[in-house]
Length: 427
Image (cartoon, rainbow, N blue to C red; front, side):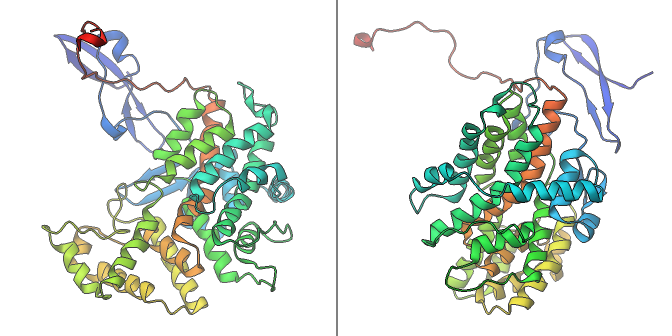
């Protein structure tokens, strides 16, 4: 007999099925609760509510486990490249050599952005936030590809997927160049995905640009680590918008906007802003370590610990190595990064932090890497978006293929009860 959960409401006993995932996660299926009882559940922030059953990502925060389609994040970061991982997330299996070459080849041929999109881009002021620009341009892409409006899965969905993966780095690099008042760079298709992104962001027409292989390797790992993370704010936004059968461009644009929020994608930016604050106050890292340990002090170390991972962030262990390699390869003398190293050492050794699992997380190390590369802090979340893109696409594709119903959360109304309209002259 299938396992069930019993609920007693108003003296009536009801049974609800229990669903079990492939990793033994269990959920109570309350999809018929309101129909049978008139009640709903309330769960602010949806911390205990599953909106879907998904085969894409497994995350165990207590054990520090992250797997894409069953493959550990450690193995993928060590042995795969970003486009291979993108294929895995979107299509469910690691690509064969033939599938990989075809996938990469198609992405390479679509890296150019329509010049009319550039006209829209040119309409933004120089100081426009890159995330707002990126979200707007991705949404505008639907106007250039109207066949994406089909309320069923378009026959050329794969082409739209390719376009997004190919063009988002070009748009991102344009955002960076525009903010600096530099001429825009076009893609160079002889380069791999990460190297091409780096040259578009940093090459100048007056001199040759050589991609540092250590930097390209670190960027590849960062994008893999950011590629997917289960039903977070931006991912669930993509699914919610996609559930209305909105096209892939508008759904991804919504995800970018959700990621923009400082409580989600802006964490690595907050790390650098904190380090700058410490530097401006004299650079005494011990002072701020003591402040963080003082329960009466509102100061908190940014980039330490994680809301989901209770013991350690498996991504942080991987990117710490890449971070050390980048700093050594570039030989940067930066007092802000010196402060970061001091905080890292304290957090890894100090009993206060160790006992509370306040370890440096992936946002801490990614912020340091991006600063070392010379990427402005307002571009950090843009880099995050490039990495998260294949995860968003995979989630949108899964939702549409499963023909899931439109998302429609309920609420408990707490406003005024029925009252009569009062004419304006009597108010």
